[in-house]
Each structure stands twice: as C-alpha cells, then as structure tokens.
Amino acid sequence: MSSENITVQKLRERFGERVLDVRTFRDEITVIVPREDIFAINQFLRDDPELRYDFLVDLCGVDNLGTDPRFMVVYHLYSFQRNERIRIKAGVPKDDCTIASMVPLWKGADWLEREAYDMYGIRFDGHPKLVRILNTDDFDGHPLRKDFPLRGERAAEEER
Amino acid sequence: MEDELREQAATAEGEEAMARSEELWETMTLNIGPSHPATHGTLHLVVELEGEVMKKVTPKIGYLHRGCEKLAENLTYHQFIPYTDRLNYLSPPASNFAYVVAVEKLLGIEAPPRAQYMRVILAELSRIADHLVWLGCTGIDLGALTLFLWTFRMRERIYEIFENVTGQRMHTAWTRIGGMPGDLPDGFKDQVTEFVNTFPGEVDEYERLVTSNRIWVERNKGIAVVSREDAISYGLTGPPVRGSGVEYDLRRSRPYSMYPELDFEIPIGANGDAYDRFLVRVEEMRQSTQIVRQAIEKIPEGPVIVGDYHVAIPPKQAVYNEMEALIYHFKFYMSGIQPPTGEIYEAIEAPNGELGFYIISHGSGKPYRLKIRSPSFANYSCFPQVMQGGMVSDFVAAMSSFNIIAGELDR
Image 1 (cartoon, rainbow over the protein chains, first blue to last red):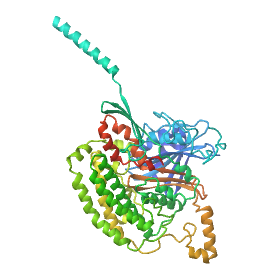
Image 2 (image 1 turned 90 degrees about the horizontal axis):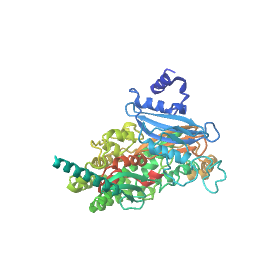
Image 3 (image 1 turned 120 degrees about the vertical axis):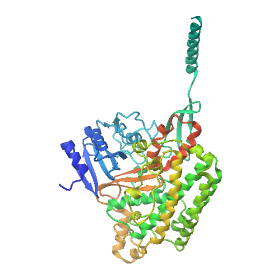
C-alpha cells in the first residue's frame, strides 16, 4: 500500500516481520507486535526524529478470554510533532504473564502498569515497585479478568 | 604542633558526636488523609518527614474505587452514561460529553449541530464551575476564605443553569448517544447571557483579591514545580501541562465537536509551578466565558438527536402509533445499540485535562472493554517526585494546584 501511514511504513522498515498486523478502524491505526519487541518498538517510536511519539496517553490491559495469547497490553501513544495518535498492542499469554516495563521510557507508565497488574495480574519486568494500586494490598484475584464474576461467589474463576 | 593535635582530636570528637546524633535522628511518618480537610476527597498520602522537609511522599489511592470499568462491561452503552457523572463530580456534563463522543465515533455517527452546540455550552460552563470550586478550595487551603464564598456564589449560578436544562444540579446525565435527550428550556438564552455578562467582572474581583496578593504569591510561586520534560514524561494534561509550558489542549490540537467554529485562546504558563497553574486556570475561565458567549449566538435551530432508530430512542408518540417504532423501542431497551466490531480511543479536553475513553466492541450491546483515561490519575502520578524535598507547609498549596478529583482518579 503506497498510501500507508508513515509511522507504519517506518515500523515495517525497521522491524520487518515483527510488525505482526496493522489494522485501521475509524482512521485509528492499531499495530500488533510481539511482546519480546515491545520495549524496542516503543523506544523507536519515542526517539525517532521523524516520529517522536513522546507522550504515553494511556496503557491498559485487555482480557481476551478463550484466545491465545489471552491478555493484551495496549499502549496509546501521541506525537506532539506529528499531532497523531497510534495504538500498539502486544499479546501476553496466561502461563507466562510478563511483559517489559515502560517505566524507563515514560515515568507515567509507573502507575498505569501497577493498575494493569492490579486488574489483570500482568507482570511488568523491570518495574520499580509492582504493587496493587486501586485495590487493597490483601485483595485476592484480579477483578477485570473476564472470569472474575461481577457479584456473588467466585466459583466461576479459574484460579485465584 | 600540640595545638594542631588538639584541634584534630576535637574535630574527630565532633564528627563522632554528629554520627551518634544521626543514628538517634528518626524520620517521622505522617499520614495525611484519607479524610483530611486539605485533601479534597478521599486521598491518602504517607509522608516521611525529616523535620519539616518531606523526604518521601507516597500517595495511596483507590479509596473511591467503584469498579466503573467492570460495570461498563456489564451494562449497555446507554446505561453507562450516568456512571460518567461520577468521574469528575464537579463537572459532570463534560464527562457525559467525553463518553458519548467516544461511542459516536465507534458507531461512525455525528450528533446534529444543535446538540453539539448544547454540549459545548454545558461543557464550557462546567469547566468554569470546576475551576471555581478549585479556586475557592485553594483559597480555603491558603487561608483566603472570602474567595471561597465568592466563587461558590457564581458556581451556584451555573448550577442553576444546569438545573434549568437538565433537572439536576450535580449528576446531570444530560447526553444521549447521537444527541441530547431534550431541547433547551425557555429562557435559557437570557439566563446564560446574563451569566456571561456578569462573570468576567467577577473574575476581575477574584484576581484583585489574590493575583498580586503577597501572601498568595509567596505561597504559590516556586511550589511543586514540574519541568516541561517531566510533564510530558508523566503524561500530565490540562492546566498542569499547560502551566509547564506545553501547548497541549485537545480543543485546539485535535479539535472535536464545534470547537473549530469558535474563537478562543489557550493560555500557557512558563514556570510549571502552582502559581502558573493558577494563572492558566483563571485565564481559562475567561476564555470559556468567551466560548459560551459565541456558542449561544451561533447555536442553530433543528433536531437535537439523530433520527436513526438504531441509535436514538423513538419518540413516545411514534411508539404508540407505529409498528416499526414499537419494535425499535423494544430492541433498544432489551439489547441496546449494537456498534460494529472494532476499537476506538476518543478524548476531550475536560476541565482537568484529557479525559479519554478506549472502547473495544465485539459487536454486542455491551462494550467488551472500556478503559477510562482519566486526567487526575496521570496528573497525580507525578506527585511523589514533585513533592520530594519540599516543605510540609507547602503540601497543601501543591495538592490544591493539581486539583485531583478522587472520583475520576479511582474510577
């Protein structure tokens, strides 16, 4: 595609096959990447002089129960220079629920990763202090997982 | 020679004594909040003090966590609108606005111009109301009680407008996906015009009270400084990021709704301290007044909600008389609107900064995932670094200057 967005072009140029999928919906670009490369890709997006996605708008987890990998970590980046947003997603399997921490790139990632850990149990490698943030320290389970019931007994949950 | 030796011994003794006293010296741990007059809501901070200097500040959040995002996954798109009131409870119309704009983007529709203008007017009035509460409470924290009484008097005028339009003072829930639930009441224009005519004079009064007041300046200048780089790295938005000199306002940088049609300025600070955040907010109140003044003149006649029954509730008269409308009525209340599969992120400039909604739809009547990007969460996350090494007496001024709202912080 010749009309492809410059950010996607540059990502493909630099990372080739490791850009797993690119989707466009309502003029928003979603790039899916493997979790092993997430730090390098975010760093590239932040530091490339033509892109400069230097603002981490949001970071959150998603639970796609029943698919593999089960979890997704979603990064919303914004570039002041280009006035554009991009969404980067990386899958995280349930058995090895870890992904690199973005705290060295953005200080704001600290609390956002703590929230994703609190809600989904995704562990962020290299996070300075990965503890719960919204729930109490002795809370059991991760409430935004799809198998965590909205109310009542927690029998439906696979494991605590 | 002897003197020298004696001197050496004396210094060694002195150093030893110092080391001993340092061992004895303990830092004091002070819990501020979760229920403290200066924390405005349920904020809790654990502060390690060394004398009056704060060595380490650890915010504990989550006291107002209600699981909004989990609830959203179990409610239809329309049922979630009242929950957005409870995000920033000082300016609910702005939160309502942010949510419906996101859902409309997901659906690929746009509300009619009249509804858009209504949203802009209510959102800008709520920005003024939010800043007024902030200014009044900051005044109380810093010992300027008069300011509180004055700002709350004007806030009440705005709430009277809200009540007139929506029937509620606080939790308005006055948006629908695809438009607004009803038209403006009679006398709305006169009421708002009167407000925009009197309000700039009131802001002058507030400014005469505090802007160059020596106590106010000394308590705010140089307090809780956030550098430009830190502001970006922490993801600050709203008055805190603009106070640090970053020109980032979604109304200008990524215009939505009717903002491209309106003329206004974005105030920018330079030093990133509490005083600059104060100046930015005061100027924003003036600019919002300008926006409301223009919008009230430009608002066109016409429908306030889209005519598509897949999105909007059919009028009652049609439900009673037409088979088709009756079917849509049932479908609407049984399964809700069903957006296509996809994911979107849309944000507006709420009074505190970028309030965004990230929605994943799997094509059903309920969102698969709804993440709220709340401005207070990001703005508060810089607090440990900003407060480190500051005086405990400045804590209150610093806290106030960020205007952390527990409702949207904890969601």
